[in-house]
Image (tube, rainbow, N blue to C red; front, side, top):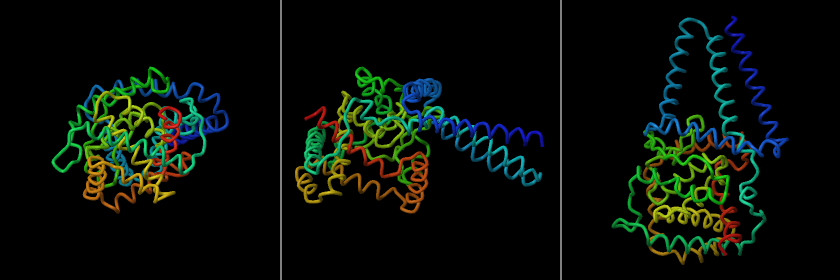
Length: 355
């Protein structure tokens, strides 16, 4: 009974502290975020530096071990009739993981907007402005598409995953010279053993803050793979929200000296802007699409075919529902749709930096 009470007490303390962290982030953001993103990046750099000594994703081993431990201890608790002790043990474990998650990285969901940290002034855009920005990203993608190697069907060839993983941080090192918010760990991205499963549920990667690992599925479409790698590193730069990690990924790709990263960045930027334009003005989107060259069109078609072949609709729907709930819990009201909100940042960047 003493152990049970101790576990309950420790769980309560951790959950109270967790609640205090969230309250401070919501009600004293100027104080908390004057230091927290930098602290978060430092902690993640330390953790990533340690876990980078092995080439495989430790997070996968950790998750598998937790699942096995959960099942084994549950069976043991049932046999020995110690369910109360088991439940309190699970509660304490969850409390420790939740506190560590929020303390190390999770508070970044409540950080000031990325635009503010980059010195850009947020505003609303007209459809014409969206169309203009979309045309710019299309033209940049058209140009970059000619600089990458292609297969016989016209789609971008498959570049070596390990080589891309090693190179993905280079753009962030360039960005860090001008923006302190990109001064984080650029250790290599890791592939996932569970890539076939990731492909079925429609996920291309993930960032695990408890191990500092930016992980990407090898089933990600070739033209999107470099961008996806940079997206996951963007999370390690303390950008928790998906649209901001997307924008960080784009910026890193655009600053790269490697053609495959530049193309992947503009390919993805155009995709998000085109989708945003198509929602508000399909006719304007059709006009923009008429200017897409054969190489870029081939990759759009190739991506659609690729994901249709590997994705399981039921599994993907369940995964989206779960992840949507997770994002909602951290005040991301648009849930999985928040990925596409990067279009706002892309338009803003175009008018302030590229026009």
